[in-house]
Image 1 (tube, rainbow, N blue to C red):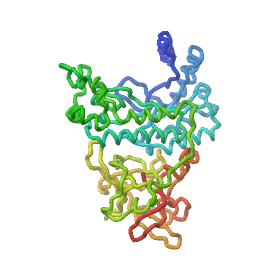
Image 2: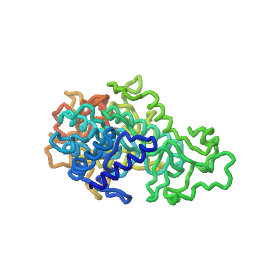
Image 3: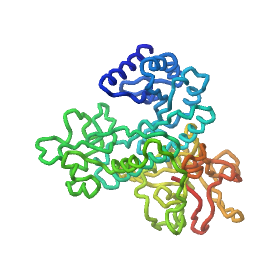
Image 4: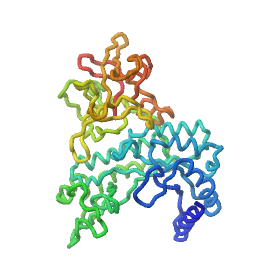
Length: 460
């Protein structure tokens, strides 16, 4: 461990000798993941030991201005790590300047979205306050990107733009929850999201497509260093003309140089242009998305269309259910099906239909209900619900029926966020959970019983 700490110190020194100073370092990328590439595995105890006895003292002596950020993994377990390593009695705590958190959470479905894992961000900020951690402690979103492959490879306008909007949502949600920054994992990749020697193909705002450059001769669509081939099928963007791609948000002037600048680049550019260092999140939450309010938006007569929302790429098992004011997007369109499951429909990143149902047990790491398979024979993890009108209170209770718990304690509730909800407040992104039907957290108010249209806030 001492040699490893010295190696890291010399690594930082080598860059400094070329005029490149390191802002900070994490002991290990994704310490909980047994990675198939070069990596070390840590639990909180072993990382704490390494920082306290080796990395911390070494950098304090050789690179005192280089910050040490703990964890550097998914949002699922960041609170547990903080409770151990940031405790003032832990010998590593005096060396730790911040916590690094990845976007990903709840499995390997890595399509960015600001709702996923966000309640744990709020728990983390609250925990820092409870533990009296110094206010200068940095909370940094250190890695995020869409996977698999690229919007250009998908070749569909909806794919590239859906990824761009979800990217922006993730950045804004992290900042609203208390993050001090956001790092896009990749600056530039090739057309399929490589090169990567293990086929871990992901997206980036800019893609190198030298075979599309004006005057390009005998340049293959994949260069010699890309060994992945086409793991997700053909690259549909390569079959589109310069003019077609330009009309879909890939500027022709850059394609002519062999560069595909994707829509997400401009979303990130818009945010970074106005959210400058030292900026503060301002409390704000939009209550309505139309002059008529949220009527006929979440539950509504079948076949009635509501504009907005685009494709729903979140109807996928393992996605966390959170609640927001009704805004009419496809993410808030739910069906109480014949089996009495709350079912949501969508598409994967290539437009293949997907469907999931709301689970019945809160996830132990995320703290709320998750989407799961609708196949009761497969796992039995989805909930069966009944909508029970409560006319005298002008609301309905949505009651979980396949539970051993008393039905009076089995209603869907909106569990407010910790940290007072950050910039969105406790209503924006509250978790869906199961609780007492008499609690103030019960989530839904009747608007029109005959259409099962619910007012208040509902799933995202």
